[in-house]
Amino acid sequence: MGNLRLVVILLALACVSIFAKDFYTYEEALEIQKKSNKVIMLDVVRDGCHYCEDMKKNVFQDKEMLEWINQRFIPVEINLDHDEIPLELKVYFTPTFFFLDKNQKVLKKVPGSWSIEDFKDLTKGIK
Figure 1: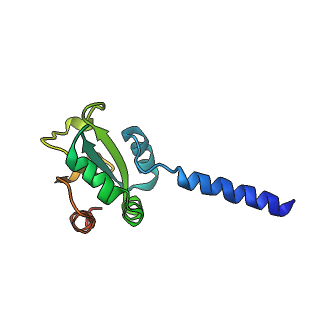
Figure 2: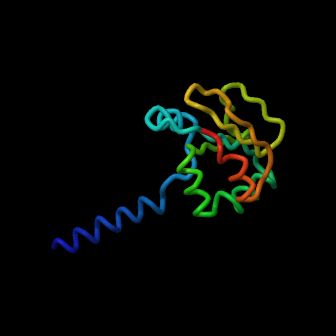
């Protein structure tokens, strides 16, 4: 009976990690930021944006990169076609990344699509 309970618990934990969220809503990120003091990373995208899809496929679907981002930031995706951009931020093309401190001040703005290595280089010093 004890082994069965252990198996059930392990399966439940595996399901939670498989279906864990990679990106949060802005409201969720604000709540998480209060507890963690991590920087919010806003990824502003648009439907049909080829460069946005490249970032999703080539950067954000990489497990190691996603772990690297989650260690440093609270990732949020804002879609210009469906969501309202917070803080009256100006976006001239997509994707554009904004990094926000706990006072919602923009620490850095990174426009464009990047490789994993370049995105790490552009964002590693943001705190």
